[in-house]
Length: 630
Image (cartoon, rainbow, N blue to C red; front, side, top):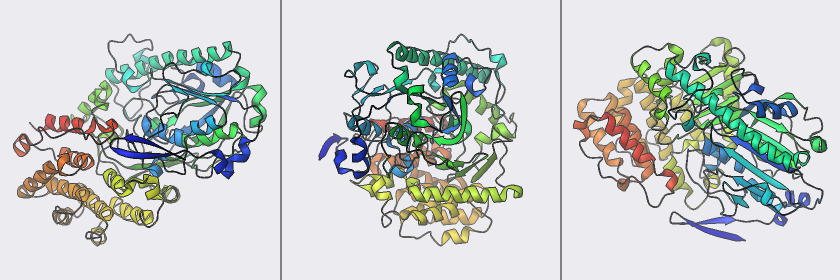
């Protein structure tokens, strides 16, 4: 049967399939044995800066007590280092780059093959509540939860009904560590400042306030656990506690380092339910298994007695359907608010590898929200003044195409080993494993966001991505890899694709030309080739070509290129995704007021046909350009 919802002017189908139609799960549902209650307690914007993870500066007695009677996971990745795509991973059990849902605060259709985990649990008779954040990059059915509000609670279920309850605490969110005035409880003088941050008062105060917020969050965790105990439900409830990604400090949240991806994960299985995890669980221990958010859905289905559907991309790590320990876990970073980017990450027990497909952009590209944090502002001021060392400056410089870190000897990831011959075998192994994963999930990140949605049409982007005729992912990986992992003199090979009939191929050629112009390798040839792409039929390669010409061409070239970027910055001349691409490029051209005049004033900032999730991006970019075009 079908259910329809009207959103943003488009009729969207929700495919509601009874379990009887799914042979892989129908047998599981006939099992009438009691099912465990499941409680998820989550906190926002915090990594494993907790006492139970060995942080002696932290004050987190309730979480520490839960860990003492549960099991910690030493390495859990959130897959995405920011909330909306991380939550999308959890709710779907599918990597968002496979869904086309990888961009921060976007909204795409779920494919017909997939269901969200509350749908499975409700079909098993569970009462499912969410208190209360959603923030998914997916269009979801309005009845996804039995209740989703700040009043949602297991106490509202029917007598004897099993529950799946989520409680999410926002007190540790990025916005809370910079609110002033604040009375510090943790002494800023005793903060350990990581080597990638400058050691200033502002940085110390922000870090200390972060720890203060963790203590407040810990009290909220204790409150919910006390309610569980008071209701006599401790022995029948499996409890998970985890943070939703790394700390809200800059270079934590939003970045593919351990500081952005690694989160605490603690699971408590009470003694009466430990038969479900025999041989997998030891009270008070630290598991060395690599886990990530994509594994949470198959794990809880396993604990509830249901075989995880084959389409899920994660693997159960507990319960009767647990799998063997994986060799790798994976991370991704794409558009962060108004800033386009694309990076992928992989780690094993010792090494982490990051592949940056937009090395033309610095780590610290201006983000309106991030620059509200005092640490961000003082860090950038010191960089501009030339007062930082190499580790601290790295964040503000164009990214390398590849990063490789030995986490055993370099836990803060400040020594990039990608060019070190001693680690060439490790680099090749990690590089190959990441490629294999991207091809396996049919990563949609190679498509510009607007191009992806246009090509998908009325289909879910996942459907587009899994059609080899419509989405030749191997070919796109090849051109993107060649364009962005440069070597001297390879521009001639790149230019053989300049007139390719596929606009996505031409987009990556344009990116490759910009990278070569920035690095001053074959700059003259790159600018000349970009000049010939300024009238490309597709606006996405055209924007990048115009940026290259404006930044590195002649004054006459610059005038024409900036004029075209200004024209494309008006959504009425394309769409909001073209406008965002043009505005990003225009910002890096550092236009003057004399060059752009008042041409950006009065352009539409919101597309009424799009979800409100996109509404802040064009205004933020316009504000940024206005601040530099003086």
